Image (spheres, rainbow, N blue to C red):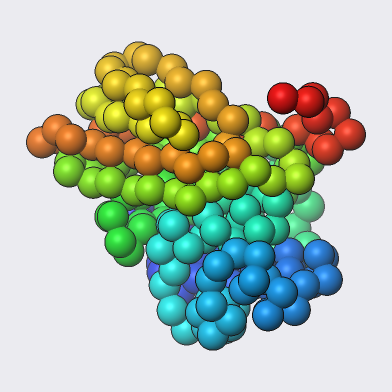
Length: 203
């Protein structure tokens, strides 16, 4: 795989298979997942058949309903190759949001047994993405480290202006909006950790 944005059909197939697998694990019908996520039954069915290119906002709604981080929807479902602790940069899948144009790279080794995930994001000038994120049964922590450019991140009712080298810690349990109000691209890394329900602390 090259450093270009991964072939849309390949990643679409991966997302489709991962979504079907997670829905099956939870025992949700299409109707049940539609009710939980606010994404229509027909839209979910089309995603699972790889007949449409879902936006990041839609995928986040599905991830919230399935109690997983958004990044996990890009995991490989292949069981033919054993997990490896190394993910070469040329093999790291890159996906472009069809709505905002932002590009995310899943950096972490696929299917490695760890609660930690690393994601790299290239955020275009003038782009905005708003997630209607809600609390999950599993607590998800994120830390965003800005590597270039400037962005604004609104978590709930609080807006944070981030500049080169700044790091923002957040829990993914409320609406989050990312904005690039500048005229140049921003790039940042995200560290994601899922906290098992048994370790969840009362807020």
